[in-house]
Image 1 (cartoon, rainbow, N blue to C red):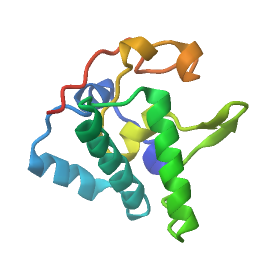
Image 2: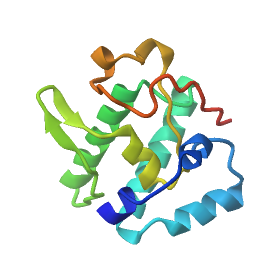
Image 3: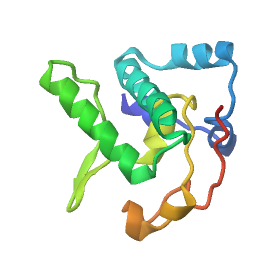
Image 4: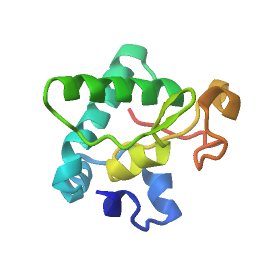
Length: 139
């Protein structure tokens, strides 16, 4: 699992992630995801799409999305399905690295900070590759 998450990818991987990939490219990328991570990738993709339908935004604020993802994973776990969500505990709650979300979904889901939340005080991340990144144009 961690070999996939920590694999070497170039900066273009993160620049292209979450852009308007065609259906065939999305399917190709999903097929490349290791079997153990496919349920998690599916949950991330589904949660992102549902949030877009409900809120009209491509992403929720980073911290909110990560908390939603953690809650969904815990509910699934209560029902006997472990989707292998990687997280760590910090004093203010669970931490899911935004970069892991992009890597786990093989770039199907991209990431950027919402300008109103682009602040370590708000999101809990002192260092983040997505800070000051103002791009996600998924339609």
